[in-house]
Image (cartoon, rainbow, N blue to C red):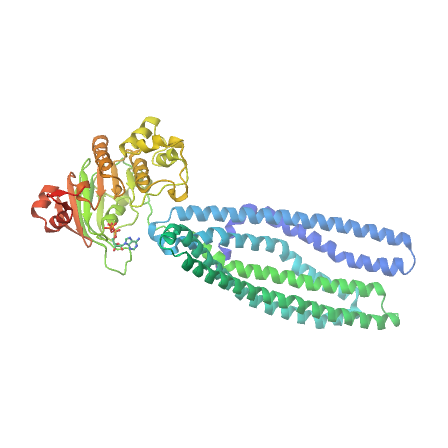
Length: 579
Ligand SMILES: Nc1ncnc2c1ncn2[C@@H]1O[C@H](COP(=O)(O)OP(=O)(O)OP(=O)(O)O)[C@@H](O)[C@H]1O
């Protein structure tokens, strides 16, 4: 419940709507309640006494009540929807913004599938609960209480029937509501399972096809889908039992009313209209109880969603700015001083005592076995993660002291997996620098050897990249991702194995273009190929998270065993390096 209450601030801007909706509903309920009594008067004072004028007069009154009730009902629906739609849109927006600021560890903790469920179906669930609440929290209890009071005042002879019927109805509805609340919680968990499976399968569709695992994936989906179906059926069955049960109890009440009523009409202690009005009120009591129970049920279903939403909204990004961050422009001197880092703080660090220095304009190559920690080192520079021990300095200042946007703005980062968005090529490249001129845009394409293939596309730079960039080759993706980093003209350029899918001739041209155009940038180049790094000013040789050698290609070749071993594996016949 705490979770639900902490979301009330999202309701504040729409408080006026949220008040108007139930007030309008009150109007509808009042009109509904008064109508059986009018009907009773039409029967007993009009029809029974042959007073046609009275009948028409009351009939007019009844129509007026119905129209006012209709206005109340429609008004309530409009304002309840307005409140709930705006409320949920604001939560969705905040969730999206919160997730955007998440650090990588925050994202890893929540998982992508759950975050998507959060932003879609959890918010939807809250929206439905709020709409229902605004419509029904007045309607249910007021109809229920109002009908009981009116029966007490106008048909006291039949009131004992209510004393029997109402507790039975209330108990049955309360019992089934509680039960179905629990069952719907299980339905929600099953929806999670389906969402996660769909998301994972669609993202990995190519691997699934390549490994011919379609059948296996379909089986897995069938299993989560069947689980959802069974839980849905189970929850619906409970509602299915409730309806006939309450109808049975109400029908018993009606029979009792007709029976007792008939005797009393014979004794002239009651009139026919009173019996008919009583039957109407009995139906209203059942409707009121059912309405209240469906609000409770919807709230019970929304509480787990609210909890999950609040957990995301309250998650603090682990990587934040200091109170007065440094805004001095970055020149590009990077120093790692005894840096250690672990992704999982209970496990062994993946980087241990990393120490090196890069001067502005230098090229630093990083080489090592798979999993030795190369990407981890460069991920620490734009603060994708924060170090556990030691310090990273840029231009002599710890990176934590810099304004985060400014720090990242000074870095051109191309991660190992080239990620492009479903936009045009130009928009994708300009993502690195929206202010770049057309000349700078072309320069970046040329430096990354992307220009030649973009020129050949029918719509050139306006070519639309599909979701997941499936309409580009691996090498083309890498070139565009590099162009996006280069267009920034960054003080620090980081290329994480970005030429693995690029042919060796293009790779050499890229290296040359970067050397010529980015003389002042400090360049970090991660690669498993010596040929990509041999001209670097300094090469760091990593082994299991430790720097086991650093120096130029020649220095390392002369005295570093680990480097010599890597070189020997990449020599082709004749003693030259494999390009
Ligand atoms: N997000 C993460 N969460 C937990 N562990 C991680 C994460 N990323 C990497 N690791 C682990 O950290 C270690 C170093 O990984 P890293 O990606 O830095 O290696 P690498 O040298 O770049 O490897 P490769 O050449 O295969 O890209 C590995 O053992 C890896 O399993």
